Image 1 (cartoon, rainbow, N blue to C red):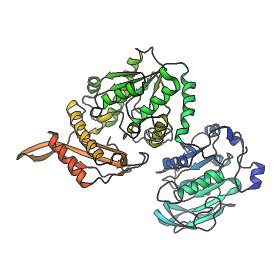
Image 2 (image 1 turned 90 degrees about the vertical axis):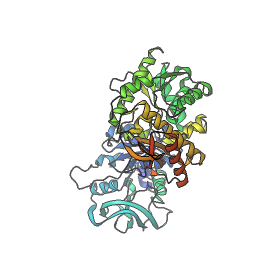
Image 3 (image 1 turned 135 degrees about the vertical axis):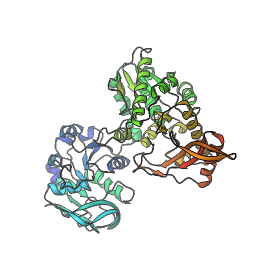
Length: 539
């Protein structure tokens, strides 16, 4: 099938928008690549495309053309970005991207980059356009077909397209954007100034769906659950008859990864559960019992609490903590591997959000090193097997349900691999502080479950600022105790998050229990920071 732009017969017949990239499109999984120009919402574009039923992945804008051609995408989306297209050092749009033979959609900066490259007029507007804006569609074209002429959309720009490039049709305008959308159907080039990927643009998903369906001709049958058979084939091809170990934490990510690999290769897999002494209360016993007794997956449990605490003694810098823990995990795996005929492969539950935040894959800034990405040692002796690396958390849950994992485990709130260690902030991790934090977290979780709010929250946990004390009065005596911070957020994918508005009576019960039941604590506070500007975890 030759890639074509629907609605343009001449282009379809001539294959002008086809080419080598799309030559065997029907024999592969449809994919639309998002090229990242540094936009705040770039990863959300890929998520929305996936929600429309098309696989999508975020790549840096400077990704090699050969890599794009190798993947043979159905279309490209150029993301927004913080720069002005006229600024020195601004990311440049390579014209070759517009000549690959697949449709291209530019969003915000991506639209302006197309306009600049092809002769449009872009200027800095006297008034910026940030937040909600009213959009008037005066020519539906392919992107707005069947949608209202008056819409609300989300804008975030100061540079504005005043004239579309020659041959383009202007489709819409907003208060401060004379050309808020354009298209050149024969060339398969499209641009929108607003952000369709954010929830503040009510018809944004509809616009994306029209690009994916009516323009790119995508099959739109992809789902997270559909990756199971694909990953099983990949796992078998990668490991053959080799022995494999899995770093099992008991969380949904490593559990789904372990079960997926076990389905692929059976008892070639041995899971290794390392109890580093930084798990939540009773968690280690629950994990061991579940995998040995319920899932019947070969499991080795290693008690390594003393070893990890010795390595963390005196360490206060958060990135150093993460890397020490990541390295020590690998060292334990290496030692256990020596007892298992030296397996060559290591399974990890790495997610797409882990890769993005660790600066991998997109050229993005490193927000923090996840222990299973940026925290890995350079002399790693294993070949990694990461079947979830391209999935977001909610997609992993869908895979888990499809694999038969119980909802109790599938919907468990995310818990970092380094455990409670990274929730003891600005100070050393030691047994006393872990005990305080473990008890505080247990109280919080117990009360949140009792209130029926557990499934409504993305994460809820406690933070212990290790070097912070406060004065209090208990039993008519002065105290000088620890401060516990409650952190609870709502989110769809952990890339953005809002602080959860927990009921006051729930907060009162939690604070009262912590102060009364944990002798070393005399003050409880609530973190009301969203992400961005903060992150979900403190470190």
